[in-house]
Length: 594
Image (cartoon, rainbow, N blue to C red):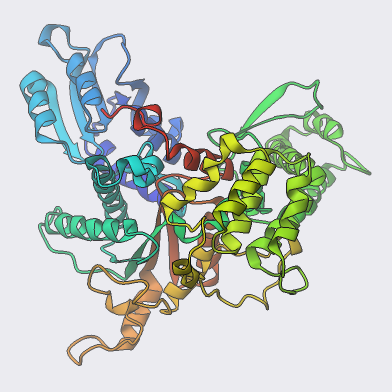
């Protein structure tokens, strides 16, 4: 049996169970559930069809599509408060005589605007038995990772064509509302703080979140004002660490999503070579092996999976000698009991081998260059004196594609805090990437210096000393966000660089200075140890290496759970395409608003 989902996914499912299914439960009565695109994705992330069956749901339908009427059954509508979804509901009950269902139980993910509510009321109020707002407007992507439901967020936040427009203000407002639904699901009222530089996006969003938190907790179910809980919410702008977004990562999950065409977490593979039948596997937390190895270095994964396979096979003494994929498929036929276990191991062995087949010919050499440029030192700790000399072999190598060359050029530029206009033009011309040059130039819209100036020199970040930590030579870089997480937990973040937009929760105030009327410091620390959370939100996307950092820091600091989220999850290619699009007109990039 699959392991129970943990963390955020579990919390969201429990909230949906109590707010929707328990709310309209009647013994021995089956119902239909209608979903829109957002709620379909939300439910698929935190439950299976068997979970819905256990709650009395027999059929799952799309509210947008034409459907056969089932007039003897009641229907649950779990939808977003948008015109399209509400119109789908109204169409089902447009006249009493031809209603598709016996009655409607309506649950909105978020606040329903008055105009839509009134439209629904005037059209089909007699058929509606319940109408509630659930307050879940985020996706629980993993147990400690969330994303928001904001299409084209990157473009809307950073494109110069939308700067100081209502569109940008609207997307900031939407993000703030959705982050508050995350806090509400966690039952947290965190102290909100932000990175004061390089842009003011983080500060704007932090103040909006704080305002919405105040409003939400004034009007919660008990109509009580909830005090700040033992948690922090830190909001950061994507430009704060550009290096982590373009480096080749060699931990399993990050490497696989970077090098292989994994879409919607679905990995396609063949077990019997190129002639074999194509199979699919979903990379998800229900797979215990995936959870165990996703954050490990590829070198460890390559060692570990064959060992696990040998363990399983030795139980039946079904094979001896070297393991191959074809002998494993024979094994599976002989060992029905272990079939599922071996299937998963075969999936991950294929995944690891696919990663290595991309890594060995080209990426391995590239990684050394990237690490030297990112850190400014080589594997022996010697300072890199001439970054251009390190970069040139990559640019001259015909086996590297344009994306890899652009990633290396960006690391060179980031390492020198910008370059001259003349040097940049030469690089673009010589490498023949004129058509993709905006992948480099447009970083300026994220306030990352591309053309150097005297004002930029002070932006160099001081990093935590990790010289004593054991690392692989090609994986020496640590995402800046990991420093931020550890500094926040240890109360080492400078309040000038990381100002609070709200009252600082007493458990996080560093000094522990509290008045005699308050609880003594010791009990605050005890409370924090038992219930503290650090929530990090990055505007403009997070990388898989940054997601990994949240788990590593939580593991190391057992007193605090770290939850990380963003508008979306990035791969280096996706990010470069999005950066390139920033200078394009809105109508060629953005989907139409509802």
